[in-house]
Picture 1 (cartoon, rainbow, N blue to C red):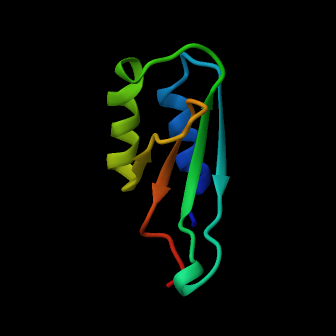
Picture 2: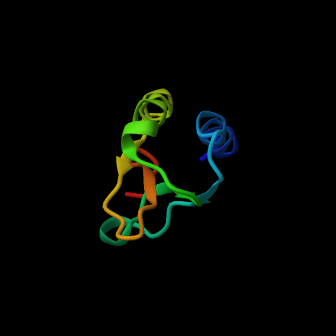
Length: 86
C-alpha cells in the first residue's frame, strides 16, 4: 500500500484528542490464505463510539476502509479490503 503513512497520519489527526496507537499491517498470503492490509487502532483511555464515530467514518470514506469493531479489548481495526493478494 503506497499511502499507508498518510492514512496513519489522518487517523492520528481525527483522533488527536485521545491517547492512541495506530499500527499498519501489510497484506499477507495469497488466494484462500490472503489477509488484506489493515490498521489497528488502540485508544489508551476511556472512549465511546458516539464520541469518535463520525471522525473515524470520515477517514474510512476518504480512504475506502471498513471498520471492524468486534475486538473484545475495545480496540478496532480499519480494513483495506481492496489491498489484498488474490
